[in-house]
Image (tube, rainbow, N blue to C red):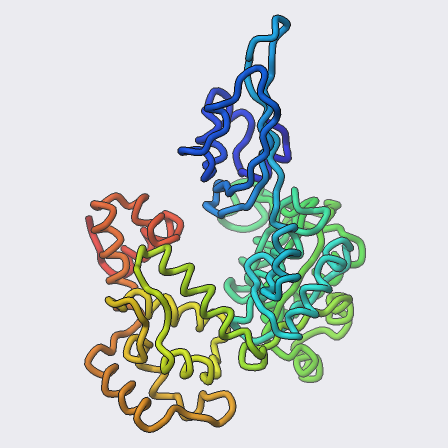
Length: 427
């Protein structure tokens, strides 16, 4: 098991030693279609395409070549499996077919098409990247896609939210500290810069970075040396910086809240993610994508959306962008008990603001709007209420097993436990 397969599966060779390959690859070829069941010493190599599931439970399309390995007497001694990652190939095929995608970013609009064509070339450089766009447009996903397609892909991708921590803690989090640097610093701590060595550091909400730390970041961009708190000795780290913000940094510069020289250094390559309301044709594509995703995840027999609900969603402006559209589809799939998602299955808040939210000043017909509001009012439920019910349903299906419930929901175990605690759910 070489390093490439370790990186692809997220499992080390030491962990894999002595374990059947089906437990490492977790491929859809393993159950009934495994070629190893038919391979003998005289068998020609066999090539199959399928999917594997990596350690983070992401489905990865692969091509696997199975070849017999024989001993000196010509007897079958084992097998050699070569696994090829097909994500890049599939992305190119999707672009040729008109269903454009870049990892988890999906779109067929001219704006997204242009973005998808730019990213592969940008990924191969080490230039700093500034990703801008409204909340929910996919800035985090784009940053990770750049990392995965770069020469640093085998290194770490470290994300820091600059607005999530107070200044004192943020400095220690970014640059690290030495033992005794401040009260409570009982041991050395490597900062996020150090952890991202040979990889990528993603600074989201860069507009919230305090001015004092903007100076330290500017210094790092000049010489790639960091100074942990409590240390006078600099540490050289090889890190690519990708920053993201939904704020207008140029306005912040004029107001004295963001350094102009730092903006120049970060803005070497700028990628603007357009709001969903400006992406012609993408709402339809994303609706179908998320509908397929959640019907499979929640094991629902939903065939599609009614013409009225689809029309309403196509005209809605989605101020929360792709994140909001995803949540809307997840909500509708959860509460729909039939085979078609109707207007009444959409969240109630969308009708309360629909007059201001239609993208072209259009609205549903009076009859459709009346049916929608009348149908929704008796069933109106908040997202926390629906999320709590989703967790209860998953726990019921999993017979109380939290790990299995997390898999059904598509969450990590810690996410499930945190939400169970928030909603007071005990098992």
